[in-house]
Length: 430
Ligand code: HGY
Ligand code: MN
Ligand code: MN
Image (cartoon, rainbow, N blue to C red):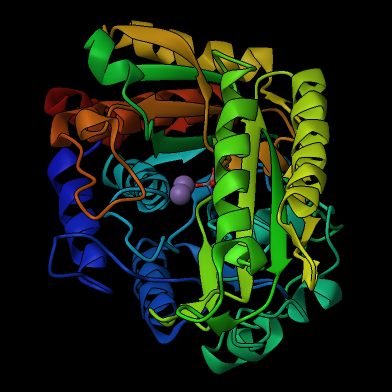
């Protein structure tokens, strides 16, 4: 039994047209008109594949393929189709379309499974426009309340609820495991690695054993706008100078916790952002990650201490700068389910696909879904390990291999009731 790699690639390329950028990437930010168009296309494909589609109150999309035993909890798969502002064709999109390709393959081969199969597209995984990151899967897993998430504003003050309504995805299905939809027996997510490890080892499959813990913070620095000419250096309350010290500190904090420590200041909004005005205020962010929660605690403590030192450092007669660091979102180190991890590893070995265990540096919806059921992930390499970048690229043969491992792992959990006449015919296809 093998998936149709060409069909998977073609679907990826077609979805990538929605929000396509000149440099070959995709800009389809959560809950924008383009996200709505991408959702409409995926929902159309789900329905064409015979799936029953429902949308929950945070906009998560679920496409269910019935199993022989409707009482069994479904085996789930999926990911996200929202992207970074300078995102790529594969981050998230691959996991949703690999799940759809599994369904299309089962349809082609006339295979019925014991348990239902569900393909999900989770809302706002990226967290670039609205925090928290992985909002849809986190709400479904019960970490956030839908009504609170509906009020979450973007930088322009537009809320999640308004945007869900505007794009037609403020659904009515229950958000979270319910009597009607009991949640998953197991969940598998296929994703590009978004780092260089698999490509460096020249391996097609990563057996993902877990993910780094993350701590995100919002930063607000307030000094004083003043004229760049008449204001002597010692008398300035320069907010951007303070941020430059914070960037150095975040890098030092992460390096001190090598090799798994990560520290990034990725977002900076300078006001008034004029070349001849001393920056008066800054909005920024800090993203800390590690494979160990105690190390994350040390990093967080060090970040707060650095903020205090910097505020004390940039002092003048007329005052200093304030440096406010507030938690935005966080989740602890994630360890996936050993049996699901094994299902992925055995699936790869059965297909003769060389593989290695790997910890995800990125967060994924499987991290939160895995709070409600056994879960694991399948990684495939991406070119030069680059992601969250318009040049993001992956090889069709790797994407196909990962999707075949996904097919095997899901069937191992869902159980197969083979339609005799079609299976016999299909075996000549394989
Ligand atoms: O930031 C992450 O880890 C993910 O890409 N949202
Ligand atoms: Mn992703
Ligand atoms: Mn991402």
